[in-house]
Image (cartoon, rainbow, N blue to C red):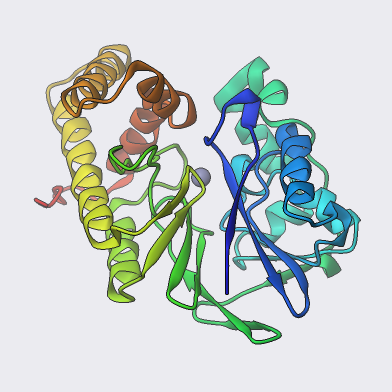
Length: 303
Ligand SMILES: [Zn+2]
């Protein structure tokens, strides 16, 4: 089994949004597609790996956020089967609601960022339950129900490796920190922590992050992701308790985010990439929503 990391070159950014290719006895399988806006970048990546894009037979998406599954419709139109979480299927088949929530979040920028979105015929979508296996020749892909970032999120366990989607965080460069992307509307910190524990319990040899690439220090990565997620939650919880208005909270979170990155010795370009792919203000919105929905009396736990 070999997974190859492809760069979609999202909005001209190198190594920001990835997809993963696996050649199987049942044809090329793709994990994640990036958004439709970077379809040409992905096609070039496939061609570079010796695969004609229209020959891709299997597309596994971790969740329907457009930077992960936004180009899946193109592969479905060319005959691929699209695998996803049962709760993701309706968004793939009828993307209108997804698109309006994207528009609410990104406003006039939505189209430029994510490109075109088209419905996928229902008979091209195959939903996978937790721990369900797909055999492609001699390769087995195990779906892992991994909520927390999105209620409809799957990770894929393949021969010791895990394709993580967003549940494994965003990380740029070997020295980059593991950062949880927390956009609205589904963020659920406790579920996310459980999902991290699920991944860690499998003792993976490598984590493939959509943002971006393979990381082999899996234990440290997952521990640090969990720690940062819980810190983010405490930060927002405290801001709300202090009665900060949303703009001040966003500003303080952004500053804290930057300060930590600088303290870790990240260069400016890497900081900017983190902020572009996982905008801090979307983290504030997602975590505020989660905390406000939580039954009263539940406090964030310590790491
Ligand atoms: Zn996502």
